[in-house]
Length: 515
Image (tube, rainbow, N blue to C red; front, side, top):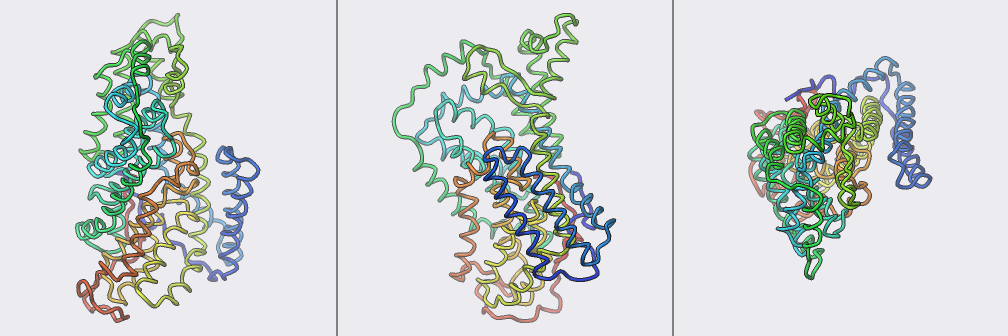
């Protein structure tokens, strides 16, 4: 798994003067104003360019603040380069997912998932089942991105054929996927949270389950209540698919390969791109005539035509021509090129977040709040709020996970709170709220992969909304407050034990880019 040295990642460089409160507020207010204006002027098309321009402009504003306070332009430029470099693994995964969608549409993998899903699932329990299945798979492989980019695509197609809400389906997929992402020992976000907080990974998972399991159960109940009552007759849809597409269990081979490689802990890009190549191979073996027709190269020998067809699906996606509008709409998609707009959004968001971090603007906003927070519940609520704000401002999940270790590590230790408390609260907030922000790398990925805007699905990501609220409620009830002396110790500031070692500097931690 690729690793990015922390000295080139999250931590802000030293600057001549600390930013004032006005300095810190100006870029953040500019972000709110310009993104809001972008939505007002362009509506649903805001993410196709206008948001990127807004983020770029706000990044220039933040750079101007940093320069005013003594940063050199070379340092600001390097911070932007390092910030974008930290996001390159995510961008490569996104491109691999685009390639996978293209070849899975061509190979019949997507339509086969839809076909058998229509046979097995009912609208009454579809949303709840989707959430629980995604939770189990994500817990097994530790990756929300892989689940959304493989299983999630098929589930979205099933929902469309059942006439179910794509927004609720996407919310169910993301809810289940992020349960696994924050509770699995294989997850990169779990490992990053424990490393920056200085906690033990298995203690972290044990404590995390106290909030994750109730949040998942409540989410499943909500999705069950949203299920559509009444009989669903899939006969017509199944007959239509049978008449237009040769459905085969062999089409599931690329999906099986992806899960086996995920369990074997191969890097996500390798896993997903291998699944894309497997999809191309299955397409060539299962329907060579269809691949050659898609290549539109009658003058080429059959072997080269097949190569061209597979290559085109990887690069630009697949275009279905069955003549059945509903099937063609589902299967005409994918390709690396389809992800370029999202890549553009991620790059500009990371650039803005890198300048904000370099200038120390977020820290300037948070430090006074921490100083005034006296109770444990108030401190935990502040960590949750900081994590959410960081996801909004820095546009990156990894920064938002590692940053609290730097900002709150010493405060937690001084108040006798165990490091596992900090890592759990960060997982309950920074990890799960990242897909709710349209310009966050996770929000952009989910929107591009599932084919629905973040604004549309966010309200139905029940797990991602309930989880941070539960951790605050637990703190208000003074329940599961783990201290250095164990559960239930007095709520009062104190000096940490002399032998207490706390890893609070994210500069010392390598980001494992797995998503």
